[in-house]
Length: 200
Image (cartoon, rainbow, N blue to C red):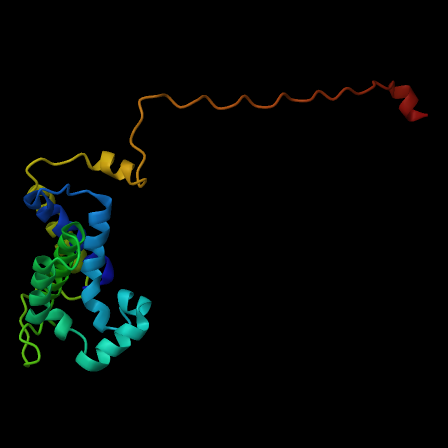
């Protein structure tokens, strides 16, 4: 899938998982980490969004493992589990990061290219619902977002959360101030000159 889809899926994964962890689903820090996790597996592709920004690392990972190699495999899943249980990162960072990472793998599993889950062995696993970059991809992502939102037991006020993040100005009941009055027109005063004088 494209980077924008992985961003949306990372956010959707956290929105769905957070209530089960006793965490607020629209926390700005957690959403940002989930989005980062949703982009992270493509560090094995130097031309991906994250690969271009981490170019020396992505070049090395691509040369060693190739695209959709170890970062898209069961080994990556084990790494996510290890990260959660070893306390290398605080849980408030590790949980959304892992949720986003797993959402990336799910998204790529829905494309015909699939995942090499048993890397380094050959063979891919896929549930090919849409091709990456196809017009059908945004529809699949939108359906997943709606499904994630509908799983929330108590749906939070999205406008208030976006307002707290500075991304949205909540509607106000106060009327808008009236527009300023137009500037007064200047009156041009001319001298009346008799017709006979103009003829002279």
